[in-house]
Length: 224
Image (cartoon, rainbow, N blue to C red; front, side, top):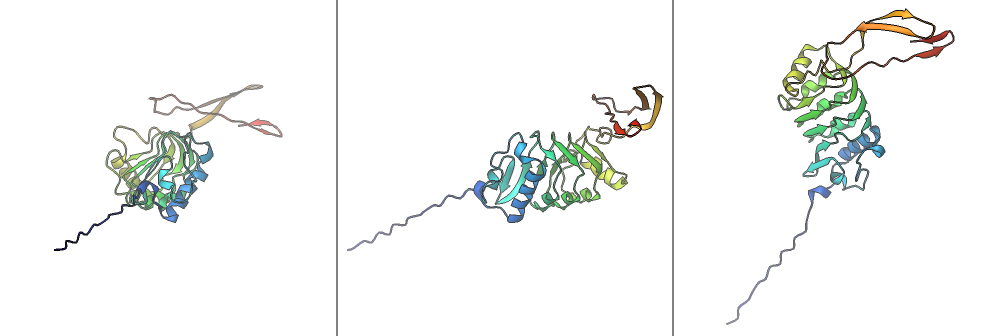
Protein backbone atom coordinates (compact mmCIF):
# COMPACT_ATOMS: atom_id res chain seq x y z
CA UNK A 1 0.00 0.00 0.00
CA UNK A 2 1.34 3.41 -0.96
CA UNK A 3 0.75 6.41 1.33
CA UNK A 4 0.96 9.90 -0.06
CA UNK A 5 1.87 12.74 2.26
CA UNK A 6 0.98 16.29 1.28
CA UNK A 7 3.11 18.93 2.90
CA UNK A 8 1.74 22.46 2.83
CA UNK A 9 4.17 25.30 3.18
CA UNK A 10 2.78 28.56 4.46
CA UNK A 11 4.86 31.57 3.55
CA UNK A 12 4.19 34.63 5.70
CA UNK A 13 5.02 38.02 4.32
CA UNK A 14 5.26 40.55 7.15
CA UNK A 15 3.27 43.72 6.67
CA UNK A 16 3.79 46.69 8.96
CA UNK A 17 1.09 49.33 9.11
CA UNK A 18 3.75 51.72 10.31
CA UNK A 19 5.32 51.44 6.85
CA UNK A 20 2.05 51.36 4.92
CA UNK A 21 1.71 53.98 2.23
CA UNK A 22 -0.91 56.59 3.06
CA UNK A 23 -3.08 58.37 0.52
CA UNK A 24 -1.28 61.01 -1.56
CA UNK A 25 -3.64 63.71 -0.25
CA UNK A 26 -2.66 62.83 3.33
CA UNK A 27 1.05 62.94 2.52
CA UNK A 28 0.48 66.35 0.92
CA UNK A 29 -1.26 67.53 4.11
CA UNK A 30 1.67 66.43 6.29
CA UNK A 31 4.17 68.15 3.99
CA UNK A 32 2.04 71.31 4.06
CA UNK A 33 2.17 71.22 7.87
CA UNK A 34 5.95 70.80 7.80
CA UNK A 35 6.42 73.70 5.38
CA UNK A 36 4.02 76.11 7.12
CA UNK A 37 5.42 75.52 10.62
CA UNK A 38 9.17 75.80 9.96
CA UNK A 39 9.61 72.05 10.13
CA UNK A 40 13.38 72.20 9.71
CA UNK A 41 13.70 73.94 13.09
CA UNK A 42 11.37 71.80 15.15
CA UNK A 43 12.65 70.27 18.35
CA UNK A 44 12.17 66.85 16.79
CA UNK A 45 11.50 66.32 13.08
CA UNK A 46 12.72 62.74 12.84
CA UNK A 47 11.70 61.11 9.59
CA UNK A 48 9.78 64.05 8.16
CA UNK A 49 9.90 64.44 4.36
CA UNK A 50 11.10 60.87 4.06
CA UNK A 51 10.31 58.64 1.10
CA UNK A 52 6.77 57.70 0.11
CA UNK A 53 5.60 54.93 2.43
CA UNK A 54 7.48 56.18 5.51
CA UNK A 55 4.95 58.81 6.62
CA UNK A 56 3.61 56.73 9.50
CA UNK A 57 7.10 56.60 11.04
CA UNK A 58 7.51 60.38 11.08
CA UNK A 59 7.79 61.87 14.56
CA UNK A 60 4.36 62.61 16.03
CA UNK A 61 2.41 60.78 13.30
CA UNK A 62 0.32 57.75 14.21
CA UNK A 63 -1.50 55.71 11.56
CA UNK A 64 -4.09 52.97 11.55
CA UNK A 65 -4.76 50.88 8.46
CA UNK A 66 -2.67 53.16 6.31
CA UNK A 67 -4.52 56.34 7.31
CA UNK A 68 -3.26 59.16 9.51
CA UNK A 69 -5.07 58.89 12.84
CA UNK A 70 -3.11 61.15 15.23
CA UNK A 71 -0.82 64.17 14.99
CA UNK A 72 0.92 64.72 18.34
CA UNK A 73 3.33 67.64 17.96
CA UNK A 74 2.93 69.47 21.27
CA UNK A 75 5.85 71.45 22.75
CA UNK A 76 7.85 70.87 19.57
CA UNK A 77 8.82 74.43 18.55
CA UNK A 78 6.37 74.71 15.67
CA UNK A 79 6.43 78.27 14.37
CA UNK A 80 4.09 79.55 11.69
CA UNK A 81 0.48 78.90 10.75
CA UNK A 82 -1.84 75.90 10.69
CA UNK A 83 -2.30 74.88 7.04
CA UNK A 84 -5.83 74.35 5.69
CA UNK A 85 -4.68 71.06 4.13
CA UNK A 86 -5.05 69.39 7.53
CA UNK A 87 -8.76 69.34 6.77
CA UNK A 88 -7.98 66.57 4.23
CA UNK A 89 -7.02 64.09 6.98
CA UNK A 90 -10.49 62.58 7.09
CA UNK A 91 -9.56 59.78 9.54
CA UNK A 92 -7.79 62.06 12.01
CA UNK A 93 -8.92 61.52 15.59
CA UNK A 94 -6.42 63.64 17.50
CA UNK A 95 -4.76 66.93 16.52
CA UNK A 96 -2.49 68.05 19.35
CA UNK A 97 -0.46 71.18 18.61
CA UNK A 98 -0.38 72.97 21.96
CA UNK A 99 2.66 74.64 23.48
CA UNK A 100 4.15 75.98 20.24
CA UNK A 101 4.44 79.38 18.54
CA UNK A 102 1.65 78.98 16.02
CA UNK A 103 0.27 82.27 14.69
CA UNK A 104 -2.58 83.40 12.50
CA UNK A 105 -6.13 82.12 12.54
CA UNK A 106 -7.63 78.67 12.93
CA UNK A 107 -8.38 77.46 9.39
CA UNK A 108 -12.09 76.73 8.87
CA UNK A 109 -11.09 73.54 7.04
CA UNK A 110 -10.50 71.90 10.43
CA UNK A 111 -14.28 71.71 10.63
CA UNK A 112 -14.12 69.08 7.84
CA UNK A 113 -12.65 66.41 10.13
CA UNK A 114 -15.53 63.97 10.72
CA UNK A 115 -13.68 61.65 13.13
CA UNK A 116 -11.89 64.20 15.32
CA UNK A 117 -12.09 63.48 19.05
CA UNK A 118 -9.45 65.92 20.36
CA UNK A 119 -8.40 69.34 19.08
CA UNK A 120 -5.72 70.80 21.36
CA UNK A 121 -4.46 74.23 20.27
CA UNK A 122 -3.88 76.00 23.58
CA UNK A 123 -0.75 77.93 24.56
CA UNK A 124 0.08 79.29 21.12
CA UNK A 125 -0.22 82.73 19.48
CA UNK A 126 -3.34 82.08 17.43
CA UNK A 127 -5.56 85.09 16.82
CA UNK A 128 -8.73 86.31 15.14
CA UNK A 129 -12.26 84.99 14.85
CA UNK A 130 -12.86 81.35 15.73
CA UNK A 131 -14.35 79.81 12.58
CA UNK A 132 -18.00 78.82 12.78
CA UNK A 133 -17.08 75.55 11.04
CA UNK A 134 -15.77 74.19 14.35
CA UNK A 135 -19.39 73.58 15.27
CA UNK A 136 -19.31 70.76 12.70
CA UNK A 137 -16.95 68.79 14.97
CA UNK A 138 -19.74 66.94 16.74
CA UNK A 139 -17.42 64.03 17.52
CA UNK A 140 -15.23 66.10 19.86
CA UNK A 141 -15.17 64.67 23.35
CA UNK A 142 -17.34 66.53 25.87
CA UNK A 143 -15.51 68.49 28.60
CA UNK A 144 -12.04 67.91 27.24
CA UNK A 145 -11.98 67.39 23.51
CA UNK A 146 -11.16 71.04 22.78
CA UNK A 147 -8.55 73.39 24.27
CA UNK A 148 -8.18 76.98 23.05
CA UNK A 149 -6.97 78.89 26.11
CA UNK A 150 -3.88 81.13 26.08
CA UNK A 151 -4.21 82.51 22.56
CA UNK A 152 -5.83 85.67 21.16
CA UNK A 153 -9.04 84.18 19.82
CA UNK A 154 -12.59 85.47 19.99
CA UNK A 155 -16.10 84.99 18.65
CA UNK A 156 -19.42 86.81 18.95
CA UNK A 157 -21.44 83.77 17.92
CA UNK A 158 -23.64 82.60 20.79
CA UNK A 159 -24.07 79.13 19.27
CA UNK A 160 -20.31 78.72 18.76
CA UNK A 161 -19.61 79.84 22.33
CA UNK A 162 -22.14 77.30 23.59
CA UNK A 163 -20.51 74.56 21.52
CA UNK A 164 -17.00 75.45 22.70
CA UNK A 165 -18.14 75.53 26.31
CA UNK A 166 -19.59 72.03 25.94
CA UNK A 167 -16.37 70.57 24.54
CA UNK A 168 -13.66 72.65 26.19
CA UNK A 169 -11.37 71.28 28.87
CA UNK A 170 -13.33 71.41 32.10
CA UNK A 171 -12.32 74.11 34.57
CA UNK A 172 -10.48 76.42 32.14
CA UNK A 173 -11.85 79.84 31.25
CA UNK A 174 -11.01 79.78 27.55
CA UNK A 175 -12.42 83.28 26.99
CA UNK A 176 -10.76 84.88 30.01
CA UNK A 177 -7.30 83.58 29.05
CA UNK A 178 -7.23 85.15 25.58
CA UNK A 179 -4.88 88.08 24.96
CA UNK A 180 -7.02 91.08 24.12
CA UNK A 181 -6.29 94.64 23.09
CA UNK A 182 -6.39 97.17 25.97
CA UNK A 183 -9.56 99.19 26.34
CA UNK A 184 -9.81 102.94 26.98
CA UNK A 185 -6.21 103.53 25.99
CA UNK A 186 -5.25 107.17 26.63
CA UNK A 187 -2.09 109.26 26.74
CA UNK A 188 -1.67 110.38 30.34
CA UNK A 189 1.31 112.69 29.84
CA UNK A 190 4.07 113.46 27.36
CA UNK A 191 7.68 114.35 28.20
CA UNK A 192 10.71 115.16 26.10
CA UNK A 193 11.59 111.50 25.66
CA UNK A 194 8.75 109.65 27.36
CA UNK A 195 5.03 109.03 26.96
CA UNK A 196 2.88 107.76 29.80
CA UNK A 197 -0.09 105.63 28.79
CA UNK A 198 -3.06 104.34 30.76
CA UNK A 199 -5.72 101.72 30.01
CA UNK A 200 -8.26 99.52 31.74
CA UNK A 201 -6.66 96.41 33.20
CA UNK A 202 -8.00 93.03 32.16
CA UNK A 203 -9.95 91.11 34.77
CA UNK A 204 -7.91 87.91 34.45
CA UNK A 205 -5.19 87.84 37.12
CA UNK A 206 -4.26 84.16 37.53
CA UNK A 207 -1.12 84.18 35.36
CA UNK A 208 1.67 86.70 34.76
CA UNK A 209 1.63 88.76 31.59
CA UNK A 210 1.72 92.23 30.15
CA UNK A 211 1.46 94.38 27.05
CA UNK A 212 4.21 95.37 24.66
CA UNK A 213 4.26 98.94 23.37
CA UNK A 214 5.99 99.67 20.06
CA UNK A 215 6.90 102.98 18.47
CA UNK A 216 7.52 103.77 14.84
CA UNK A 217 9.70 106.62 13.56
CA UNK A 218 8.13 109.29 11.37
CA UNK A 219 9.30 112.54 9.86
CA UNK A 220 8.02 114.51 12.83
CA UNK A 221 9.43 112.30 15.57
CA UNK A 222 8.15 109.13 17.19
CA UNK A 223 4.55 108.06 17.03
CA UNK A 224 2.97 105.18 18.92
